[in-house]
Image (cartoon, rainbow, N blue to C red; front, side):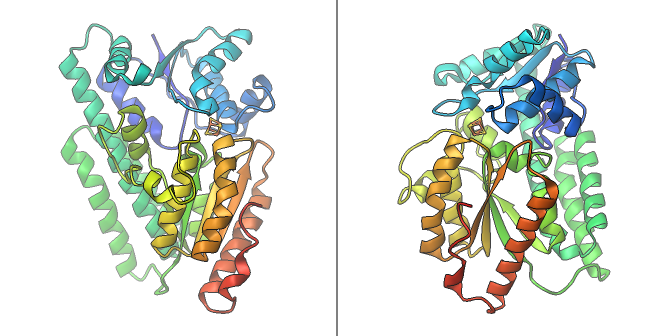
Length: 377
Ligand code: SF4
């Protein structure tokens, strides 16, 4: 068995760590790029979600490296994610790829079912104690990874030197990949924070407090820079500090481990915050998008950007609600719709215009009421 999985930002670091700790042969797909998307787009139905198209491309590239088994998480509710595993298996089979697909989700809400699927992948050579230890360590890696990403969000706008910030990020990621003990993991964000302080002390940052923008939306497009066309990096280069509604460990803790772990940036408060606007689950991350938008508005963020894969029903529901939050909290909200045809230059122009609007608003050159046509476009 040679296991592979779809990319989703830096999640591969955690998944690789899990399987290597269990001596399961793992094939990390090559980094996602335009070629990956082209491969997936050729096989997928045109109306399929952007993440599914990229997933297919990842699998085909992993198959070329010998992968024969796909591991993917599952989902429930009115959203296509719950069908990804089976749809992807059928699409790949029709194209001549004979993959086994193992869906990691608690069937019928049972964590025991989830444990048995992990056990199946781990094989009889691994004891339960070893499996539990590997899962715990991989999960801790995801929490630290989220801390690192959040530190980088804060560093980018303050550095005034995009190359230096990305170099520090790459170095921290490498330390995380190499970390094989809890102690070494916990040192990664400490060392990164120190490096950021050192850089700032050496005069590597301006004295201006950056604008703050909250990113909300569908998890894949939030976490996968290829899908968002590096929107976080673009914002950082424009002097904006970014925060996200969802981080990897918070999502895994809530959706895969059924709330047994909270991870970084727990999601549990979002339904309560969303309630005045949306009182029930709509699939995907629609409820979290609404709750997180309220949260960012209450925390005094300067603006919010929603990432919406074209045709994503839960995010379309949320997009219909965001203009009310924009009006109630007087906070500019912009929706960016993403698919395989989205061009980097067009997206960058919209992001720059949005940041310009936020800057003028913050400096008092734009009246607060004059932004209310931004959301939902
Ligand atoms: S959340 Fe949206 S993009 Fe993701 S699978 Fe569901 S419908 Fe597709």
